[in-house]
Image (cartoon, rainbow, N blue to C red):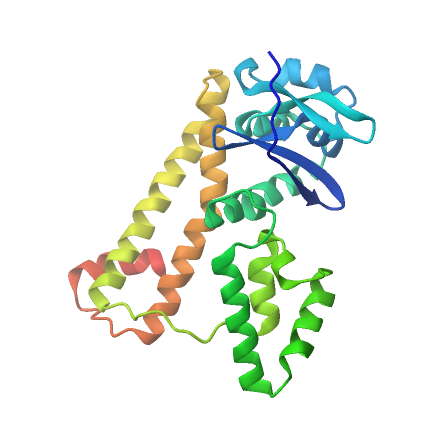
Length: 261
């Protein structure tokens, strides 16, 4: 049964649109856009062969030809199409979804295309700090920001480009509260445990795929998406160790250090 949805969002992958909608607080993807990127010649057939029926729905979508009923697929079905695609582009698309799109959405807590109020304040702070550092005028910095990201106002900055904008402005000078040596040790052990679990998941996933388990796609996503996040945690520990007083004679540190270095 088709439903009318009013919350639609369009993302951009290498100049190709990826239209999405929000259903029960989950992001669903327009099947035709995904199939076009992955070069499936027959989207309907691809969906029939590779997607689970419960992850397929229809929504009326405004197009150049008017309001048309179009097929949307769940995140799980998105990854099923990526896995089954034989195109080299599928690897690049997968990286964009896992390393750019989904982390940004989960970080901001919403599917908003533009930065939220908190991120707008961070942009203002970064601009003020750049004025202080360089002596540039506020308006000159905002103009450069608008030109760099091709936006009329900083409030229109896509949420997915927030980190890049902060880096462009020179970063934020505000420093977080320092960790103690014991807290950093706990964080190091958390990294070790997370990486161990991820590796176990990575080893189990192929067997689940052979068994055609419904968990196969979830485990595939977890093993790939969490890999980058866990490596970020490792780098944080390594960087913090340079500025934090660490007692390497401590048995707990001695046991975890080989996994960090």
